[in-house]
Image 1 (tube, each protein chain N blue to C red):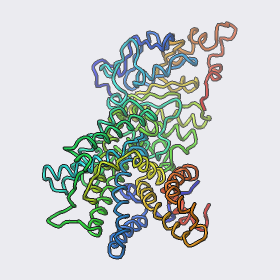
Image 2: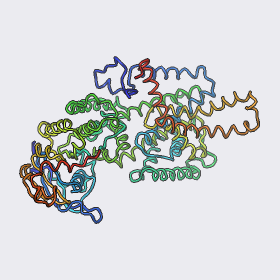
Image 3: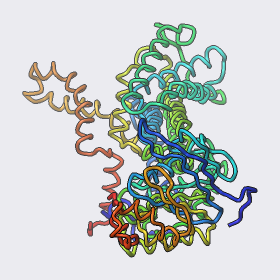
Image 4: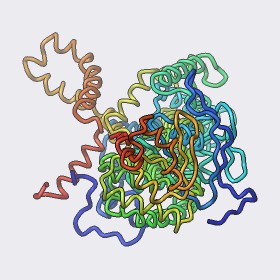
Length: 280
Length: 357
């Protein structure tokens, strides 16, 4: 929760425009996220939510506009340097290291915090690499404990059930010890119980671990319950931003989700559930 | 499914240190130590011919481990590994002959020099993958081979280079018996270092790059750096293996470091198990011993009607060649994870015997 930067915003995007050939994926998107906030991005399919996240994490670089992280411009920084700065993320479609154990997956998340290299690593006992590895193992065990995956820590990541893989992915992102964590549909394809667990983890990460969260999610119930602020994208444009209650009442948002038919304007909450595309 | 990654009953670890050992159980560690001890007694009773085979397994095994780090762990491909092996052999001989650097120091220096060459060759790997990278490394194979043939100052050209035997503190290891211990020591150091690398930060980064390079990058792994570094580490092992080879034979010829040897290195790690440290050694042993086993079979056949028939005797050399190819094909079909995986399954079977479910 501590804002150590003068600007007060942990993340600022200024007029982000992203084009793929003739397709305008994002046009002039601007928003600010304050430290300690739980910020959600919602919108219909193809609205540009994941593209926005990819711009922040460095997978894409926007054609126009600037991204500032803690007051520092990161628009064209490589993804691995952004990890050093403290931006972690999870993916919409699972992106675990399938042949590694859960433990090793999470330890990869600590890559930028571990100092031993191929030389000291090969010597292991001589250069202090062992001591360091064990220290980080301890830190990883805290995360494993927190996310309740201790029973699968030795399992090969690729063999796990879907809900567990999602949790391991979250653990790996948390292991980076990020200041800002980007979650791309953390609850897609989960049953109610798993969603409740995941919502609790996210709130805990935000409140107890002090991480700023930017989340894309289609489950409106969860979004409206746990977010501090919500931004709505539609066809690459920002159409609304505000408190969850404001967003729920916003007529433009309803139109974006449900179309122009004025008869159905009481369905903002229930109707959106059907929108969630479950990428299994 | 509980199979090979489940622990033996009663195997409890109470510290993280005990949970990060190279060998999963004390028994497997003791077994490995016993294996080394038995190997160390080999010169006492084995004939020089068989010692020669074991030394071959050692220096080829070191190079194969390097290739496995590149291919099996980092998920890249190299069709030019034998050129690095050859470069190490020439470099060590050259450092010793021209600069008078003792062989003991020339071997690691040759390894470092090969690392530099390997990293240059690996630069395209920062950009290209798969088949394209295979062709790029194939080009480096031919460039280096051509370099060996032309650079007389370095390799002695067509007449080759002489290499002094390994010596330390005035003692010269110029017999099969004595050199066996040198090769064994290098082998152990190389494999322990390799196993350590894999269980520490950069080894994990290699595997992360292999399994999902996009998310590896998001996790802070610099892809270009690690792809090139992997070539470097791989070449170091190849260079050291090659240097041992040179000082063992006493003579390094420009022939022999051809594409066929590169393919054989790939065969070793495929048969042994991609992405397994011990697999590289198992695969090397398999590839070195397979022709010997074939030879044994042929001589057994020789006493039968069939074996003395002309078509059989004429066909034997071809069959020996074909056997290697056949072995690789059979492994790809029936045991794509290699000997190392088979070994784990066997261990799991005994661990759970007689309740194998």
